[in-house]
Image: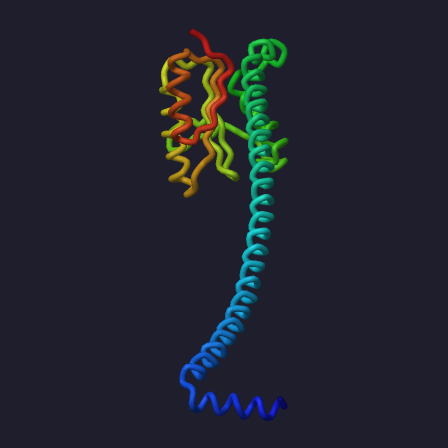
Length: 218
């Protein structure tokens, strides 16, 4: 049978045979559905590939962030350790003042000013030409003073109560009013009673006071 005859018979059947017509229509529709499903599958594969790429990028970013966090934590620990060593060294220097004063011939207050001046210069926290001095502000004598940057400090040989840190905070408020800026607060104590030291440390932490205690005694 030639192709033309086959086509003619199929067309005739489509006209007169309802069941055949529905069968052909169903096959055509099914084929169309298959084509659409294939297209959807292709699109879905593309989407999955994009999601995979995004996840891989996110994982790489998270790995980099995790590595960075580890580096920052390590740096924080090293800085914290360094700060502890510096504080320990400062305390040791202050504690050794009694021996130093025998040869230097200076008071503890003078020693504390010179020690802090040298330390702050080395750290680059005050200009090289700057010098911590004594200052009277509104009738209050300040043991350690620098105007720029503004530093206010108190020096005492012995502390049995938290009075010294309260005194420093009061003088710092006077300086803040006079110079219209927040001062850096420093308290240097040669020896302190254990109970007093605990109270002083607590207040110093709350009020952002830098504290150096040479020795803590019972």
